[in-house]
Image (cartoon, rainbow, N blue to C red; front, top):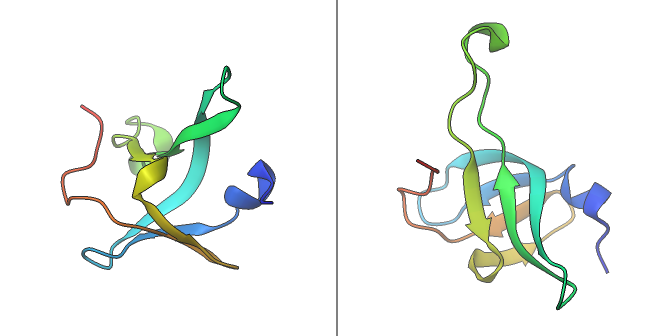
Length: 83
């Protein structure tokens, strides 16, 4: 079993293009089923955070391919940011 605090410490990498997406910042939960629906990768800050952040990236749980010791491998299309 993986703790949510452990998920936040792992790099998320898209196996489709090899791009590093960042770290898990939040989780979307299905409270009725007691399951994780998606992980949210927080967008990078712009100009030391003064100009806001880039878009967050939402990765659905079924798009996660492997949770390793240091990394979470996901397989998503290249257009995966929130609008």
